[in-house]
Image (spheres, rainbow, N blue to C red):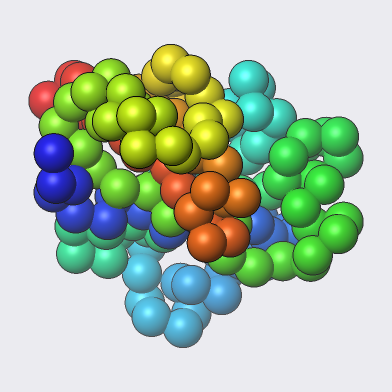
Length: 136
Ligand code: ZN
């Protein structure tokens, strides 16, 4: 049941190119993947920091959740993703202990992961993503 690690930290940015440039210059990291997720109306860019990734998120539509987030709160940390071994079981457990779910069942996210979000109203204001790599 325990997550194996923090899979990634999602950061909402208004300009993906500028943000990629920042992480490359600041830490000498190399962006290894840029991917558009049409379903969520975002463009994502990934960096590896040990086992954890930084996921930069730029909205492709002002009505998307990232677009609305930036409009109301500005750029910043958007969510934290925990890697789990059995996402269905973890979701069920979250529901059983009274956590409000955004996704009642997992869906496909960036990098082919199965993902689901928990509602920040139930989790001390943090948007928590749980994810499982079923391709492993
Ligand atoms: Zn994410």
